Length: 261
Image (cartoon, rainbow, N blue to C red; front, top):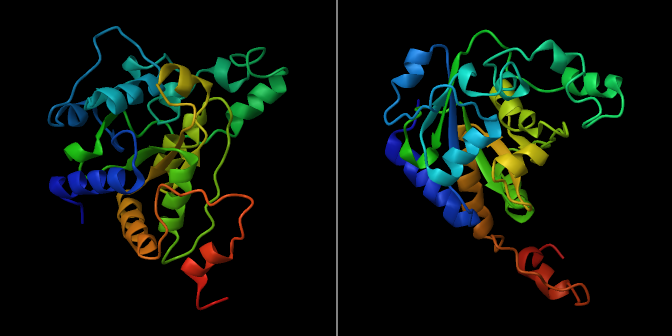
């Protein structure tokens, strides 16, 4: 059952408040037709003939609050920008290693392997994507929710996600084109997917120097919120107050482990 728009607004505000996030979480949704994407309430479209990198488009949603709809025509042609989210298959110059050779990789073999191991939504099914601040509730239900967080915020988000049903949260590091590790992997697998945003995301998308990114499903967001409340009841909340490297830790441990020491 999908959540209603007021639930999206509350979930977004609660997540921002509990983790003191800098910006709204972002909802993403893939569409099989351009027309279905264009039916989203309040949708904006880039000007005809103007192309952006995918991280720029997400940055516009994050920093300007747009509800933005795109097709392959709005991203760099036949590139990883649309390829990561399944709007196109990357051109041969990407897949054979030519594009990134002598830019990110010293050998064409390393460049080719980078492309071969990149998480992507398979091309062919989807022809449009919309992104919007989660709080607006315009993408019901979202296929993924993006949360930008500092490392301290991110570890408590993961702790909250694990609090009732533990799983080991592994994450991948593609290197450049790290959006493949966040929205690419998240959209293709539906699993929580953490990334270290890459050079391009920071240069073109406005990602801050101290930020990580996680892609979640909506049910993960609700579990995180429940977990943050549960942890807060045990004195574990953000921000994490530094105790000091030269202090006896026993008094601090007693706060949480008094009946276990």
